[in-house]
Length: 368
Image 1: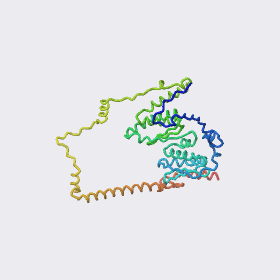
Image 2: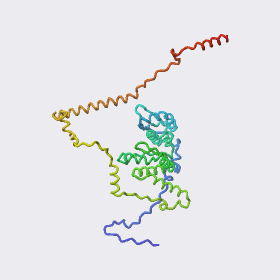
Image 3: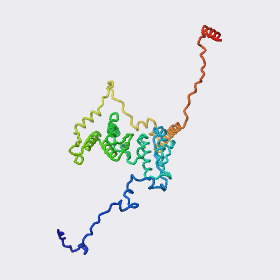
Image 4: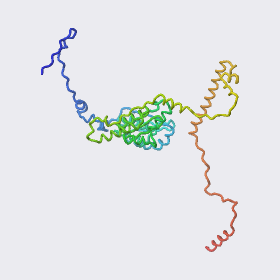
């Protein structure tokens, strides 16, 4: 086959335009071109061991994380286990209960450069109400975590609370279904959702959570995931397009009249009728009327501003004193209840039984 003739060169084209293009050389695999002794296993992360980094790290790296007061008791109890788990990877962990911080740092023996990043995720999860058993799994190679902030996804607080409850489900049924399908642990706490598991599962959970905050019920995504799971088991349908088997949900749009009626029903509240009076209600006092009554209206503007500032300063001083008292309460020892004496005094009011005493005396004499 002869090559197709090229079009004639234009007036303004350079002389080298007709030169033949250089043939592109096929790129070799990077594993064969680079690396010590051109070993393909050198690029495999799973084969990384202490022998690859015998000298350790050059400088110390450290990360710290704050935790709320209600998590203090749990973290304090499980801290020896955390120290032991991190010590296996040659990491040092510090707990400061006064400041409410957890700190993780590398040592001279630390040989894995990425383990400090995983340890940082562990202390973050512990402060977000994730139990120790699940948080420590992040130190494994194929396990990762993600903290999704859902508080900023919905503006209205009431809507946010409803959608968050929808994500949890009745008695945590929705969360259990998600955990079974994605093989991830999910924890909903406050304005965040924490997930621990493989990357494929984290990707699915991220999508379901974001859809739930966009008013798409998680049950729809759960149904599609269940169908995909069943299709993947079938050998014949593995390489086929699954769009025809998956359900296609459409968004229902309410008409304007129905939304108005719903809003009216919500706003309408039955007010109890008071006693009938022929006289109209007394007029509400305005701001100026209140100032005239208190005498503030006749004071100069400068003095009025000074009075406002003084009132604000006094209120802030009272608040600061109350806050300081609350902080100091933590360090104050609780009043101990008085200990009861081991030997209790006999009540003197009880009458003495003479017949019993005589019998005891006779028995003691008989024994002698």
